[in-house]
Length: 264
Image (cartoon, rainbow, N blue to C red; front, side, top):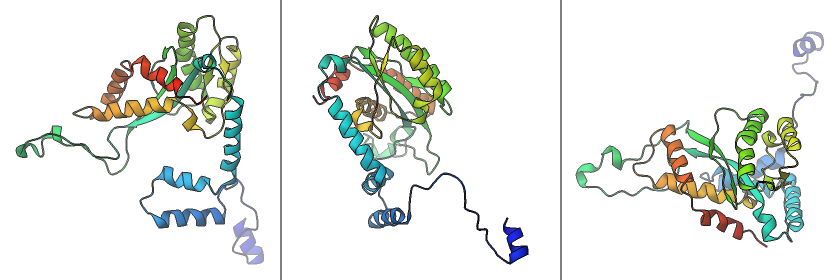
């Protein structure tokens, strides 16, 4: 203890090593980040992350794993890809965070509520959703409430993925994809997948590879639809309503077109 060391030896610090998770950033990495930010103080977090990844060891290893994953699936047929069910989570903010919104108005309508887009200074609110898509149809858009851990995620698989398997792939064994987030690899989820191994195969996923998941295009599609609404949604409930309305109207040729875009 510091007080004991001071009383007995006159020391003002303890020689005991700190415990806890090992820091991933060393002094060199911190200097690199400072240089990145110093060049452009308006650099976004994704841009900083991308630049930092070029200086970290783990992303280099992950890049090799992604390359190997692509090689392993290079000779997959169209039929095999059409058996894949892609899934992911995404969030949609209440207010538009970037870009401009143009409106038609008369001079007297400059401050009319329908001609204004509200903004916030902090505490941006958002709606978190889960979805799954397949070549044969879309699964439900599920709004996630609160912290999602392994047990609630297992319920999503049981209540939403399982009916999707039975409806779109009766008597077959499609392939289910999700990423390597801790909630997806929890004991509860692994138990569920093991119990349903005769109904669905699990697609081993490479780390940090959102660009390989075609459902990312679905999120972009829905984001554009939400922002195209005028007047824009003013509450989180309205955001949820818009997402559900737009999701059920997504044309199948759009979803199937995503499968055709997979490199072969």
